Image (tube, rainbow, N blue to C red; front, side, top):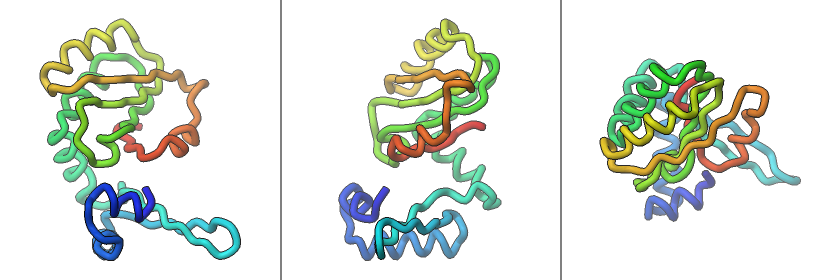
Length: 154
């Protein structure tokens, strides 16, 4: 997300967002990458530092909070060959949502996936929307152009 988008979504000033991003960077919980746009424009893109010792614990807390821990466990244990699972949409942006938007990459049993969705939706009180790709169809760059995404598996 851009700084202005975070400012708007969180309802705080851009200076507050910048300060908090700097704190998270100093703690090495997030990593910043600078990108150059045009002549002099610089953009910073932030992402979670997956190598941080607390990453897995924090990820687990977040997934439990939105009920995704149950979804991910079901997907991994029963669906077959799952290579990647991505969270997109409002939940990936940190907003509450009645929907869980997932992208699953792998060779899976689609009929069984829909049975799992029917079982999990009442447990988490959210509708699950899913897109399934085989590895040949999926390009990671597609996810980078789709807004905020969170890689859950793979």
